[in-house]
Amino acid sequence: MNPTDVTFDFTPAVRAKVLTRDLNRCARCGRYQPEGGHLHHRKLRSQGGLGVIENAILLCPLDHHWVHSHVAASRAIGLIVPGWADPEVTPVLTWRGLLLLDVDGDFQSVQVPSVPSEW
Ligand SMILES: [Zn+2]
Image 1: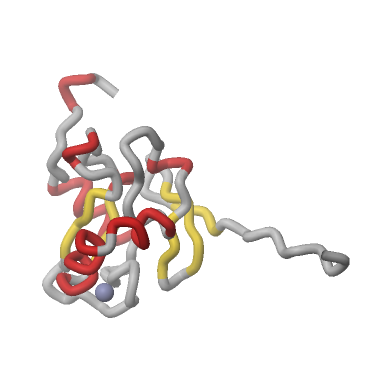
Image 2 (image 1 turned 180 degrees about the vertical axis):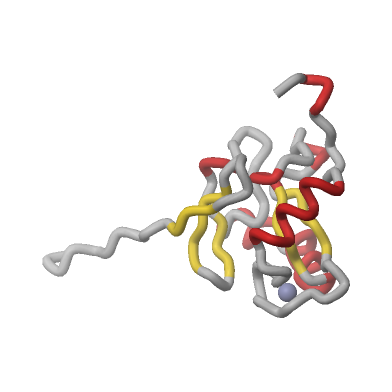
């Protein structure tokens, strides 16, 4: 990517891809967002988070407020990514399960290893 293409804000093109990827549903509660909801920076702008698709997730207004007022809980589930981490390799827990968001606007489900029965 050309460094001059990097912006902190989400462009209309990124926004459109996120809404498609996230099925116009809030990542946390799964409710449909007919008005488009809020695009959340998983790595916060104040931490150097960019307006790129793997750093974006759709939230309803209530859950966007919840995320920013529950930072530790949001970090634990990947809705907030620390400044030192890469959103592309940090899974996020959504209503669809644990996902890795990629730079192309796709995602992969992450399988959580089960604890061996002898434990
Ligand atoms: Zn929600």
